[in-house]
Image 1 (cartoon, rainbow, N blue to C red):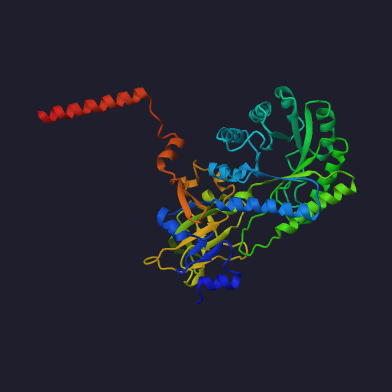
Image 2 (cartoon, helix red, strand yellow; image 1 turned 180 degrees about the vertical axis):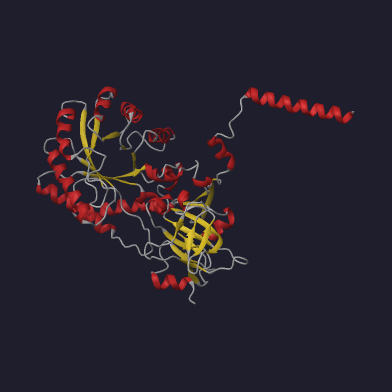
Amino acid sequence: MKNYIDLIDQTIEFPTREFNINENNELLFNNVPLMEIIKQYGTPLKLSYLPKIGEHIDNAKLLFRNAIKKYNYKGNYTYCYCTKSSHFSFVLDEVIKQHVHLETSSAFDIPIIRDMYERGKISKSTYILCNGYKQPLYTQYISEFINEGFNCIPILDNLKEIDFYEKSVTADKVNLAIRIATDEEPDFAFYTSRLGVRYSDVNSLYLEKIKPNPRFNLKMLHFFINTGIKDSAYYWSELSRFIYKYCEIKKICPELDSIDLGGGLPIQTSLQFNYDYQAMVDEIVESISWICNKNNVPVPNIFTEFGSYSVGESGAVLYEIIDQKLQNDKELWYMIDGSFITQLPDSWGMNQKYIMLPVNNWGSPYQKVNLGGLTCDSMDFYNTEAHSSDLYLPIFEEATERQYVGFFHTGAYQESLGGYGGIQHCLIPAPKHVIIDRLEDGTVTTRLFSEEQNSSSMLNILGYNQPVSIQQEEDLKAKIELEIKSKTKLASV
């Protein structure tokens, strides 16, 4: 029987820029020896490889710089990070190192951004694009930012939102954006997105509520496609429709000079992934330029708000196979020491596929398997690859060998969707989280960001370990002292 490395060699071109194996047939991820990480920290284990974040941001900037030069595009490009993809401080700190800007989705993003400002990570000139449907606390925070001189642009999601800023913003100038509600994909449950202002209302919103107010400037239109930037008739149709609308509004609104292209570039979810990033960005820039020139309108500055593309490929989750179960003649289960439902919720809720590879034993024969998680839910499994209907892993002897597997490019959304630090299905604990970085000389460094969640934290959340008051502590202390005195007295008798 062939070995696992033979299966990979006949399936894909291997090694890749990210993945290779060493002389011990153990996996390297961005040239980081994963077995060494496992020996140090154990499993289950979440990893964040920070250099990947800067690499992707630099690459996106280069893509747009090349396209702008190619088509002699007269507008500027600005990279914004979509904070909802990952709110962790080490992610935001790494993102900001690349001199980019930020896009928010919730009121609770704003205290994070204020903290970054107070720590000197950003300045008031940093763009803060505020997206999403906004409740009063969110609009209050936005208004405070604008009044304090931050470069904050609220993206209007409905016709009433602007009323909050009329009442609460005292700044002389308020830059605004409008999110336009795009049509969803043909197979989606709804025809038009629930978010944004419909096309037919954009003109009246500008003419009736923005233009008459001398403090308000409409600077940007926002475009969002939930499926991201894909080379499909649907994407190009919606983008063209949006740019034509930009041209229409620009003719009646001279201060309008920017567009925000929401919905980001895809990340690699298979080792057979094939996506021409430069060709897609070229076509976007060319399409915008062509439509604007056709309508005798200056091209807009381009903003993007890449989230998954920024952080997705920096993440990984490592598990140990803790048991093998043959449930019938053909269904062999490898049981992991974690859960897909709680730790990789996109794999369960959206049938998302990730790059899955064994960490060790690449020189061993392989077999078809199913991977099962620890919860009691029948849906806690993973049994197909993005490029194959089957899943294969090395054969190993439980008595003498240990087998580890890794899921890669998991850095976006999973902690947020899974409820990091909270209560998970079947009380499966959140795994350890390790941050990997490199020094300037290339030396790999690791540090533990968080320990595995313990039972005490879960019991506190569930109300079992309620903190006691000072008086209760004093009463308990007095009771223990009294019991000790009583036992001492009895012993002496």
